[in-house]
Length: 229
Image: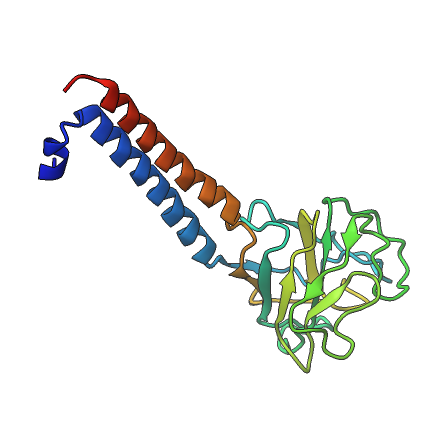
């Protein structure tokens, strides 16, 4: 205890309360500061024979990624990047193709394929919602039905703001026929990196927390003044 506190004859309880309150406030500030600065880095293999659109041939269903499980929230900005490649013609010795697309969804529902390719549509994803690409869309990158390209021949990577109410993201090879897609070395993958988060506390919250600290300290001080020295 400092000499000032001894001279004022403030009880140890008051000192402990003040220090604990301030420490709590400081810890919360540091916690939120670190949380907002953390960069989520994840890489997942993508089966190029799986699809979330209807196609001419049978293909396994794409498995959606849960944004909650990845620690991603609505309003967060993330970078999606393609790794590796696959063969679109069933030749494992010639894996050169790397087109990849995705769509956000409010849920993980994926309806059965119609067995016919009508273009890149989200008729199988009833919860599909539009995303906002932070740097704008390159020519033909953003389709009119909530699907956007992560990579094509002319670019690789998309910085996207997660839409409000988005809970899942479907990611798959961009193709019209999937059954003959082969990735023998299993290097076709997507990287998901956090650019910025929307989970930073509002200023009013932090101000309220600090105000409570000051209030608790002042209240204890006034109570102690009423006591005989």
